[in-house]
Length: 230
Image 1 (tube, rainbow, N blue to C red):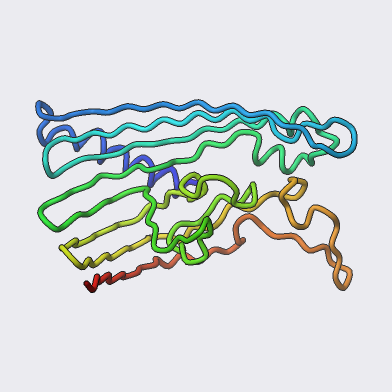
Image 2 (tube, rainbow, N blue to C red):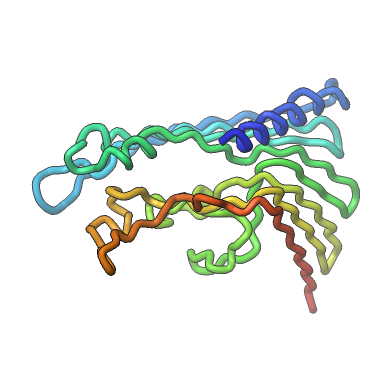
């Protein structure tokens, strides 16, 4: 968590402290805020609340000049179903998922001719087809609801360096992620946890941790070459 906070603070400083000094008089700003509320019941058994979620999203886009721009986005969620039905949902899922604050796109962008670079939290899509993202391997996913819903909302923005050269019929993209990130899995007790019922093998209870206990600290990089043939 400390590393994530350091990444957020560094990106915010670059985006909103350093950025405006380039050409503040010519800067343009766009703001957008969305609020979503939903409520649902389980159709089987006694009436039980399945979800009572409130989501607030904020996004700000700043263009300082023709070359420099930035984006700041964040999403906060409150799920009241877990606290309303403590007998149905375990304390583990309620403690982890009742309140969530996730960074969305938070990056500084530079453009010059065919070259574009982004630094900060961002989403990069390398493969998507028919509602599935089996080839979309750059960003981890929020799978707390089995990956249902808009794919862009399920992707977790990841801090990275993204450099791209775009030409008329080809492009080159280089990515560097300083620290690997992982999917957010449903906690034990969630309706979407595949191990909601006790699964025992050789006397041991099988559980899937949300993040590995000893995650690798090495950075990751990738290169994508795209060519269009007429």
